[in-house]
Amino acid sequence: MNLIPVQTFCSKAFTLFDEDWFLLTSGDFASGRFNTMTISWGSLGTLWNKPVAQVVVRPTRHTFSFLESFTDFSLCSFSREYRKALQFLGTRSGRDGDKIADVPITPIASDIIQSPVFSEANLIIECRKIYSDDLHAERFLDPSIAAQYPDRDFHRLYIGEVLQVKGEAAFRC
Ligand SMILES: Cc1cc2nc3c(=O)[nH]c(=O)nc-3n(C[C@H](O)[C@H](O)[C@H](O)COP(=O)(O)O)c2cc1C
Image (cartoon, rainbow, N blue to C red; front, side):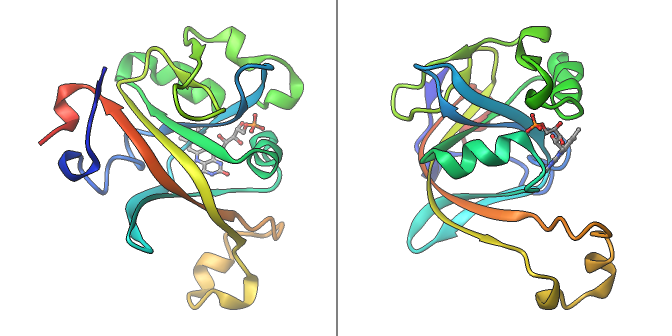
């Protein structure tokens, strides 16, 4: 897996999250305190003249408490071979046991952040948290979106500065 300077990173903007999915992982690899979950909502872009990744996480997720406690997170994408594993990690909670042990993916240390990455990933985006805020009921301008939160468990938005991208050649243009 090679380093990809963000200026030469290439992907389909509207399918990268929605169709390909990521594992969002936060915590501390060294002590074994981390958790991961599947996400399909988010984006990559530019804010404050920095390359950023934006993700949204419901407070009910176990991963949420790790995102709150630690300073960084990783986003790992995988080939379709790992689809079942991502489906599993997106429907089971780390709160109920070691769900990562039940899938054929391997957490490994990152060389720059505390949170782990996964050795089977075909794309790894490593981020330092720089902003977070909750989505607020009164700020939805489209009521049909607010209606998607009957339990009012509004996502918290996390913006991470992209510190490093590693990926297969297909992600470089
Ligand atoms: C395809 C897919 C996409 C998902 N996207 C998100 C997301 O963007 N944000 C979110 O909060 N939960 C999302 N989820 C739900 C979490 O992955 C799921 O609740 C998971 O079990 C949480 O695990 P945890 O409790 O160990 O953190 C998604 C699930 C799937 C299957």
